[in-house]
Image 1: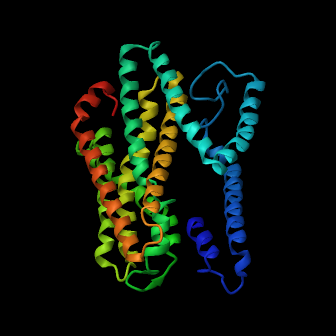
Image 2 (image 1 turned 90 degrees about the vertical axis):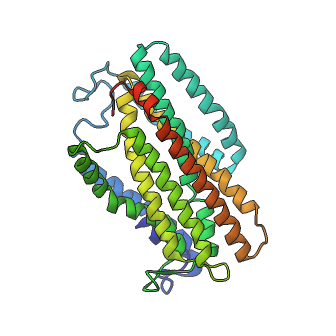
Image 3 (image 1 turned 180 degrees about the horizontal axis):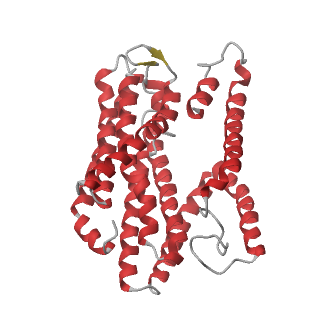
Length: 348
Protein backbone atom coordinates (compact mmCIF):
# COMPACT_ATOMS: atom_id res chain seq x y z
CA UNK A 1 0.00 0.00 0.00
CA UNK A 2 2.78 2.39 0.92
CA UNK A 3 4.62 1.73 -2.32
CA UNK A 4 1.61 2.89 -4.31
CA UNK A 5 0.10 5.57 -2.07
CA UNK A 6 3.34 7.51 -1.51
CA UNK A 7 4.17 7.71 -5.22
CA UNK A 8 0.55 8.40 -6.22
CA UNK A 9 0.29 11.30 -3.74
CA UNK A 10 3.69 12.67 -4.74
CA UNK A 11 2.76 12.69 -8.42
CA UNK A 12 -0.79 13.97 -7.89
CA UNK A 13 -2.74 10.81 -8.73
CA UNK A 14 -4.31 10.82 -5.25
CA UNK A 15 -5.62 13.68 -3.07
CA UNK A 16 -4.47 16.26 -5.59
CA UNK A 17 -7.48 18.45 -4.69
CA UNK A 18 -6.55 18.70 -1.02
CA UNK A 19 -2.74 18.67 -1.09
CA UNK A 20 -0.94 21.58 -2.74
CA UNK A 21 1.58 20.56 -5.39
CA UNK A 22 4.48 22.08 -3.44
CA UNK A 23 3.77 19.81 -0.45
CA UNK A 24 2.93 16.49 -2.17
CA UNK A 25 6.32 14.81 -1.90
CA UNK A 26 6.82 16.06 1.69
CA UNK A 27 3.53 14.42 2.70
CA UNK A 28 4.29 11.30 0.66
CA UNK A 29 7.60 10.68 2.47
CA UNK A 30 5.98 11.66 5.77
CA UNK A 31 3.37 8.96 5.23
CA UNK A 32 6.16 6.44 4.67
CA UNK A 33 7.47 7.36 8.14
CA UNK A 34 3.97 6.98 9.61
CA UNK A 35 3.73 3.52 8.05
CA UNK A 36 7.03 2.49 9.65
CA UNK A 37 5.82 3.81 13.02
CA UNK A 38 2.62 1.74 12.74
CA UNK A 39 4.77 -1.33 11.97
CA UNK A 40 6.95 -0.66 15.02
CA UNK A 41 3.86 -0.37 17.29
CA UNK A 42 2.49 -3.59 15.80
CA UNK A 43 5.81 -5.34 16.47
CA UNK A 44 5.85 -4.14 20.08
CA UNK A 45 2.40 -5.57 20.83
CA UNK A 46 2.93 -8.86 18.97
CA UNK A 47 6.53 -9.54 20.06
CA UNK A 48 5.41 -12.14 22.61
CA UNK A 49 4.19 -14.40 19.80
CA UNK A 50 7.73 -14.74 18.37
CA UNK A 51 8.85 -17.02 21.19
CA UNK A 52 12.67 -17.45 21.18
CA UNK A 53 13.13 -16.01 17.67
CA UNK A 54 15.53 -13.07 17.68
CA UNK A 55 16.74 -13.39 21.26
CA UNK A 56 20.34 -12.35 21.84
CA UNK A 57 23.06 -15.00 22.31
CA UNK A 58 23.13 -16.43 25.80
CA UNK A 59 19.48 -15.63 26.62
CA UNK A 60 18.03 -18.45 28.81
CA UNK A 61 15.21 -19.08 26.29
CA UNK A 62 17.34 -18.87 23.14
CA UNK A 63 17.16 -21.81 20.73
CA UNK A 64 20.95 -22.09 20.41
CA UNK A 65 22.67 -22.35 23.78
CA UNK A 66 25.81 -20.24 23.75
CA UNK A 67 27.77 -18.23 26.25
CA UNK A 68 25.99 -15.00 27.16
CA UNK A 69 27.43 -11.79 25.77
CA UNK A 70 28.34 -9.13 28.32
CA UNK A 71 25.89 -6.23 28.43
CA UNK A 72 28.48 -3.79 27.12
CA UNK A 73 28.85 -5.91 23.95
CA UNK A 74 25.10 -5.82 23.34
CA UNK A 75 25.00 -2.05 23.82
CA UNK A 76 28.00 -1.73 21.51
CA UNK A 77 25.95 -3.38 18.75
CA UNK A 78 23.20 -0.75 19.19
CA UNK A 79 25.67 2.13 19.31
CA UNK A 80 27.54 0.78 16.28
CA UNK A 81 24.29 0.49 14.34
CA UNK A 82 23.41 4.14 15.02
CA UNK A 83 26.99 5.15 14.29
CA UNK A 84 26.76 3.54 10.85
CA UNK A 85 23.94 5.89 9.78
CA UNK A 86 26.23 8.86 8.91
CA UNK A 87 28.49 6.47 6.98
CA UNK A 88 25.52 5.18 4.97
CA UNK A 89 24.35 8.76 4.36
CA UNK A 90 27.81 9.62 3.04
CA UNK A 91 27.76 6.59 0.73
CA UNK A 92 24.33 7.59 -0.61
CA UNK A 93 25.34 11.21 -1.24
CA UNK A 94 28.78 10.41 -2.71
CA UNK A 95 28.54 7.22 -4.72
CA UNK A 96 32.30 6.83 -5.12
CA UNK A 97 32.39 5.84 -1.44
CA UNK A 98 29.81 3.15 -2.18
CA UNK A 99 32.17 1.87 -4.87
CA UNK A 100 35.08 1.75 -2.40
CA UNK A 101 32.91 -0.07 0.15
CA UNK A 102 31.65 -2.67 -2.33
CA UNK A 103 35.15 -3.30 -3.69
CA UNK A 104 36.41 -3.90 -0.15
CA UNK A 105 33.73 -5.61 1.92
CA UNK A 106 33.09 -8.56 -0.42
CA UNK A 107 36.69 -9.77 -0.75
CA UNK A 108 37.32 -9.30 3.00
CA UNK A 109 34.19 -11.30 3.86
CA UNK A 110 35.21 -14.10 1.50
CA UNK A 111 38.70 -14.23 3.01
CA UNK A 112 37.19 -14.51 6.47
CA UNK A 113 34.86 -17.29 5.31
CA UNK A 114 37.76 -19.22 3.75
CA UNK A 115 39.63 -18.86 7.03
CA UNK A 116 36.65 -20.29 8.95
CA UNK A 117 36.41 -23.15 6.44
CA UNK A 118 39.84 -24.36 7.53
CA UNK A 119 38.48 -24.97 11.03
CA UNK A 120 35.43 -27.11 10.17
CA UNK A 121 34.99 -30.74 9.11
CA UNK A 122 35.12 -31.85 5.47
CA UNK A 123 31.34 -32.31 5.28
CA UNK A 124 30.71 -28.87 6.80
CA UNK A 125 33.19 -27.37 4.32
CA UNK A 126 31.31 -28.97 1.42
CA UNK A 127 28.04 -27.50 2.71
CA UNK A 128 29.60 -24.05 3.00
CA UNK A 129 30.86 -24.29 -0.60
CA UNK A 130 27.32 -25.18 -1.70
CA UNK A 131 26.00 -22.17 0.25
CA UNK A 132 28.60 -19.99 -1.46
CA UNK A 133 27.38 -21.17 -4.88
CA UNK A 134 23.84 -20.14 -3.93
CA UNK A 135 25.13 -16.77 -2.74
CA UNK A 136 27.05 -16.09 -5.96
CA UNK A 137 24.07 -17.01 -8.12
CA UNK A 138 21.82 -14.83 -5.97
CA UNK A 139 23.99 -11.81 -6.87
CA UNK A 140 23.18 -12.47 -10.54
CA UNK A 141 19.49 -12.90 -9.70
CA UNK A 142 19.17 -9.67 -7.71
CA UNK A 143 21.27 -7.76 -10.23
CA UNK A 144 18.69 -8.59 -12.89
CA UNK A 145 15.63 -8.51 -10.62
CA UNK A 146 16.24 -5.19 -8.87
CA UNK A 147 15.51 -2.90 -11.80
CA UNK A 148 12.30 -1.63 -10.19
CA UNK A 149 14.11 1.18 -8.37
CA UNK A 150 16.08 2.22 -11.44
CA UNK A 151 15.45 1.53 -15.12
CA UNK A 152 11.90 0.21 -14.60
CA UNK A 153 10.88 3.34 -12.70
CA UNK A 154 12.15 5.53 -15.57
CA UNK A 155 10.50 3.20 -18.10
CA UNK A 156 7.23 3.37 -16.14
CA UNK A 157 7.36 7.16 -15.91
CA UNK A 158 8.11 7.78 -19.59
CA UNK A 159 6.94 4.81 -21.63
CA UNK A 160 3.75 3.45 -20.01
CA UNK A 161 0.12 4.51 -20.17
CA UNK A 162 -1.91 4.75 -16.95
CA UNK A 163 -4.77 2.36 -17.76
CA UNK A 164 -5.06 -1.04 -16.12
CA UNK A 165 -7.41 -3.97 -16.86
CA UNK A 166 -8.21 -2.70 -20.32
CA UNK A 167 -9.07 0.80 -19.17
CA UNK A 168 -11.20 -0.09 -16.13
CA UNK A 169 -8.66 1.53 -13.78
CA UNK A 170 -6.45 4.59 -14.08
CA UNK A 171 -3.32 4.12 -11.97
CA UNK A 172 0.06 5.76 -11.67
CA UNK A 173 2.51 3.49 -13.57
CA UNK A 174 5.30 4.19 -11.06
CA UNK A 175 2.95 3.30 -8.22
CA UNK A 176 2.24 -0.02 -9.92
CA UNK A 177 5.98 -0.57 -10.41
CA UNK A 178 6.57 0.17 -6.71
CA UNK A 179 3.75 -1.95 -5.29
CA UNK A 180 2.85 -4.61 -7.87
CA UNK A 181 5.60 -7.04 -6.86
CA UNK A 182 4.80 -6.75 -3.15
CA UNK A 183 1.08 -7.29 -3.82
CA UNK A 184 1.76 -10.40 -5.90
CA UNK A 185 4.12 -11.81 -3.25
CA UNK A 186 1.50 -11.41 -0.49
CA UNK A 187 -1.19 -12.95 -2.71
CA UNK A 188 0.88 -15.84 -4.09
CA UNK A 189 3.18 -16.84 -1.19
CA UNK A 190 0.48 -19.00 0.50
CA UNK A 191 -0.34 -20.66 -2.83
CA UNK A 192 3.32 -21.47 -3.47
CA UNK A 193 3.60 -22.88 0.05
CA UNK A 194 0.56 -25.10 -0.56
CA UNK A 195 1.99 -26.16 -3.94
CA UNK A 196 5.33 -27.26 -2.42
CA UNK A 197 3.50 -29.23 0.31
CA UNK A 198 1.19 -30.86 -2.25
CA UNK A 199 4.16 -31.86 -4.43
CA UNK A 200 6.14 -33.07 -1.41
CA UNK A 201 3.38 -35.45 -0.36
CA UNK A 202 3.54 -36.98 -3.84
CA UNK A 203 7.37 -37.03 -3.77
CA UNK A 204 7.42 -34.60 -6.70
CA UNK A 205 8.72 -31.49 -4.97
CA UNK A 206 11.82 -30.11 -6.75
CA UNK A 207 14.90 -29.74 -4.56
CA UNK A 208 16.37 -26.39 -3.56
CA UNK A 209 18.77 -26.22 -6.51
CA UNK A 210 16.02 -26.82 -9.07
CA UNK A 211 13.86 -24.18 -7.34
CA UNK A 212 16.75 -21.74 -7.68
CA UNK A 213 17.00 -22.61 -11.36
CA UNK A 214 13.24 -22.16 -11.79
CA UNK A 215 13.57 -18.75 -10.11
CA UNK A 216 15.99 -17.66 -12.84
CA UNK A 217 13.80 -19.09 -15.60
CA UNK A 218 10.69 -17.24 -14.40
CA UNK A 219 12.78 -14.09 -14.02
CA UNK A 220 13.99 -14.45 -17.60
CA UNK A 221 10.47 -15.06 -18.90
CA UNK A 222 9.28 -11.96 -17.02
CA UNK A 223 11.89 -9.84 -18.78
CA UNK A 224 10.85 -11.28 -22.11
CA UNK A 225 7.30 -10.12 -21.28
CA UNK A 226 8.79 -6.66 -20.63
CA UNK A 227 10.51 -6.88 -24.01
CA UNK A 228 7.14 -7.68 -25.63
CA UNK A 229 5.70 -4.31 -24.50
CA UNK A 230 7.30 -2.82 -27.64
CA UNK A 231 4.82 -4.78 -29.78
CA UNK A 232 1.81 -3.17 -28.04
CA UNK A 233 3.12 0.39 -27.94
CA UNK A 234 1.68 3.45 -29.64
CA UNK A 235 4.14 6.29 -30.32
CA UNK A 236 6.51 5.00 -27.66
CA UNK A 237 3.83 4.50 -24.96
CA UNK A 238 3.40 0.85 -23.97
CA UNK A 239 0.69 -1.04 -22.09
CA UNK A 240 0.58 -0.95 -18.29
CA UNK A 241 -1.35 -4.24 -18.44
CA UNK A 242 1.58 -6.08 -20.07
CA UNK A 243 4.04 -4.39 -17.70
CA UNK A 244 1.97 -5.65 -14.73
CA UNK A 245 1.88 -9.15 -16.23
CA UNK A 246 5.69 -9.04 -16.39
CA UNK A 247 5.83 -8.12 -12.68
CA UNK A 248 3.62 -11.15 -11.96
CA UNK A 249 5.91 -13.55 -13.85
CA UNK A 250 9.01 -12.04 -12.21
CA UNK A 251 7.35 -12.54 -8.80
CA UNK A 252 7.03 -16.27 -9.59
CA UNK A 253 10.82 -16.25 -9.85
CA UNK A 254 11.34 -14.45 -6.56
CA UNK A 255 9.00 -16.87 -4.77
CA UNK A 256 11.03 -19.81 -6.10
CA UNK A 257 14.33 -18.35 -4.91
CA UNK A 258 14.18 -15.83 -2.07
CA UNK A 259 12.42 -17.76 0.76
CA UNK A 260 14.35 -20.93 -0.09
CA UNK A 261 17.65 -19.05 -0.05
CA UNK A 262 17.03 -17.68 3.44
CA UNK A 263 16.21 -21.16 4.71
CA UNK A 264 19.10 -22.97 3.03
CA UNK A 265 21.71 -20.60 4.52
CA UNK A 266 20.90 -21.80 8.04
CA UNK A 267 20.60 -25.45 7.00
CA UNK A 268 23.99 -25.53 5.28
CA UNK A 269 25.90 -23.56 7.92
CA UNK A 270 27.45 -24.79 11.16
CA UNK A 271 25.72 -23.15 14.14
CA UNK A 272 28.62 -20.81 14.89
CA UNK A 273 28.71 -19.57 11.27
CA UNK A 274 24.98 -19.10 10.71
CA UNK A 275 25.22 -15.40 11.49
CA UNK A 276 28.05 -14.77 9.03
CA UNK A 277 26.34 -16.82 6.30
CA UNK A 278 23.05 -14.95 6.71
CA UNK A 279 25.08 -11.75 6.56
CA UNK A 280 26.69 -12.93 3.32
CA UNK A 281 23.27 -13.74 1.87
CA UNK A 282 22.11 -10.18 2.47
CA UNK A 283 25.48 -8.82 1.32
CA UNK A 284 24.84 -10.70 -1.93
CA UNK A 285 21.52 -8.88 -2.17
CA UNK A 286 23.39 -5.59 -1.70
CA UNK A 287 25.85 -6.53 -4.46
CA UNK A 288 22.91 -7.49 -6.67
CA UNK A 289 21.30 -4.09 -6.17
CA UNK A 290 24.66 -2.44 -6.80
CA UNK A 291 24.96 -4.33 -10.09
CA UNK A 292 21.33 -3.48 -10.89
CA UNK A 293 22.15 0.20 -10.47
CA UNK A 294 25.08 -0.08 -12.88
CA UNK A 295 22.87 -1.85 -15.43
CA UNK A 296 20.13 0.77 -15.09
CA UNK A 297 22.63 3.63 -15.39
CA UNK A 298 23.96 2.18 -18.65
CA UNK A 299 20.40 2.03 -20.02
CA UNK A 300 19.76 5.66 -19.05
CA UNK A 301 22.97 6.91 -20.64
CA UNK A 302 22.14 5.11 -23.89
CA UNK A 303 19.23 7.37 -24.76
CA UNK A 304 19.92 10.87 -23.53
CA UNK A 305 17.75 13.28 -25.54
CA UNK A 306 16.19 10.56 -27.72
CA UNK A 307 12.50 10.22 -28.61
CA UNK A 308 9.99 8.09 -26.67
CA UNK A 309 10.03 5.48 -29.43
CA UNK A 310 13.84 5.27 -29.34
CA UNK A 311 13.82 5.06 -25.55
CA UNK A 312 11.25 2.27 -25.66
CA UNK A 313 13.31 0.28 -28.15
CA UNK A 314 16.56 0.68 -26.17
CA UNK A 315 14.95 -0.22 -22.83
CA UNK A 316 13.09 -3.25 -24.17
CA UNK A 317 16.17 -4.49 -26.03
CA UNK A 318 18.08 -4.30 -22.76
CA UNK A 319 15.30 -6.22 -21.00
CA UNK A 320 15.52 -8.92 -23.66
CA UNK A 321 19.25 -9.25 -22.96
CA UNK A 322 18.60 -9.49 -19.20
CA UNK A 323 15.98 -12.16 -19.88
CA UNK A 324 18.49 -14.17 -21.90
CA UNK A 325 21.19 -13.89 -19.21
CA UNK A 326 18.69 -15.02 -16.59
CA UNK A 327 17.60 -18.05 -18.62
CA UNK A 328 21.24 -19.04 -19.18
CA UNK A 329 22.00 -18.75 -15.44
CA UNK A 330 18.94 -20.87 -14.61
CA UNK A 331 19.92 -23.60 -17.06
CA UNK A 332 23.53 -23.62 -15.80
CA UNK A 333 22.27 -24.00 -12.23
CA UNK A 334 20.02 -26.90 -13.19
CA UNK A 335 22.86 -28.59 -15.14
CA UNK A 336 25.29 -28.38 -12.20
CA UNK A 337 22.60 -29.35 -9.66
CA UNK A 338 23.90 -32.96 -9.23
CA UNK A 339 27.32 -31.62 -8.17
CA UNK A 340 25.79 -29.11 -5.74
CA UNK A 341 23.48 -31.80 -4.37
CA UNK A 342 26.52 -33.94 -3.47
CA UNK A 343 28.08 -30.99 -1.64
CA UNK A 344 24.88 -30.50 0.38
CA UNK A 345 25.12 -33.99 1.95
CA UNK A 346 21.40 -34.65 2.16
CA UNK A 347 20.27 -31.12 3.01
CA UNK A 348 17.23 -30.25 0.89
